[in-house]
Amino acid sequence: MSLRYPAAIVAAFVLGAPVFGHHSNARLDMNAVVTIEGAVTEFNWRNPHIYFVVETTDERGERVEWTIQTGSTITSGRMGWTRESLLVGDLVTLEAHPALDGGSYALLASIEKEGGIVLPTSFDRETAEPVLAEPEV
Image 1: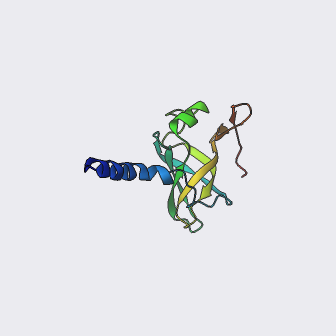
Image 2: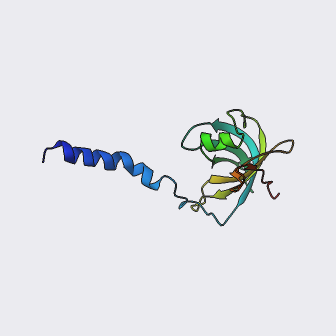
Image 3: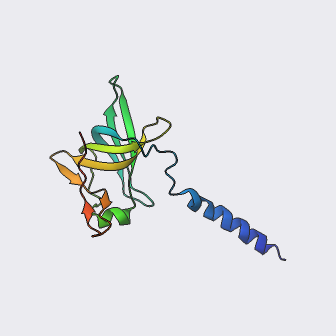
C-alpha cells in the first residue's frame, strides 16, 4: 500500500470532521425561548448560516450583545430575506432558543422589526410557503 492512501484517508477525516457536527443543536435549549428587544449592530449574510448581533440591556441595565443564528442564505432567501432584510440600527423584537451555558448566543425562532414588519423564519411543509410567526411579547 502506498503512502498516498493513508494520507487521503486522513485528509478525508480532517476535512469532513466539521460536517459531522455542523447541524447539532446540542448547545441550545430548544425547550426554552427568550425574548430580546434591541438594535441590530451587525448582519452577516453568509453560509452556512446567517448571523446577526442585537444590542440590548439586561435586568441590571448593562449592555449585552446577543449573537443570533438563523438559516442559510439559500433557505432564508427562499423565504424572502435579502442582504437588506436587517440593517445596522434596525430595532427588533425577537424570540430565540438560548444557549444552554447561559451565554448570549441563540437560534432565531421569530423576529419582528419596528413598524410591525415580521420576517419569516420557517416554511409550511405542505405548501412550501414562508410562515410569518409573530413573537409573543
